[in-house]
Image 1 (cartoon, one colour):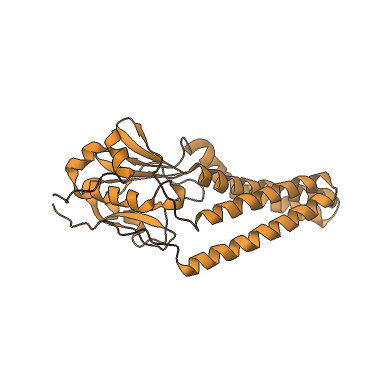
Image 2: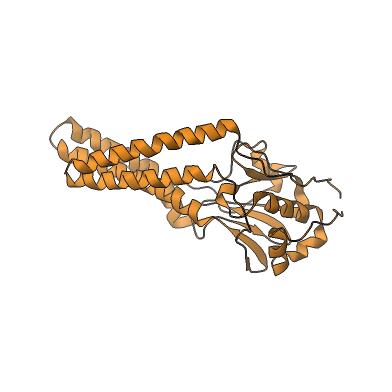
Length: 278
């Protein structure tokens, strides 16, 4: 059945409003965390010194993560073959900065709470500190549980001859090539490749979400029936990857490349897509 899919055009840049928002956030996060970290270190209290170092590290990681959204990845993506599939692994830099910033913020907050409890061990500050610590732990437990019990491998995009699967940190979403009705790459939210089906029922769910922070972009129109692939989380030129995915959607015989070095060649941009045949 012909669906008349149109390959995505040139990679859209970051919209001006989003660019200004990210730059402003980075300019606020960097000096504020740096100042807070230095002040805590200079206080001399051991717990505050530890918290200050953690805050400084968190600020660096958070700023690095934000700046990734301001640049468009270039070059050939990292690709490997596994069990007859072509796999595009998650960017190691995105993974380290995102999880490092999250872990640093949680640990530094807990250390600050301990410092507050120690400073007011016999007063109201102690009770407030205990309640804050309990709240932080309550919020963190679902995410920690998801990491410990469900995160068996890093995020990745898995392409087999039958389906395309997006593996985020706590969930799997897959879509058969024959069920794809649209391939697009809007600039908002972020820079995202959207591979959509006609119905939500066509999207297969593997691991169910646990905790917070699922990579699926909920602000994408029709997110419940789509795979929303964020390019800051992958390596390589987004436009080349998007055109390769669109080609495999529209040209069933070409799916024989998947799981072989031929897919690497196409993802590198050295193979020109042939006319769509269905």
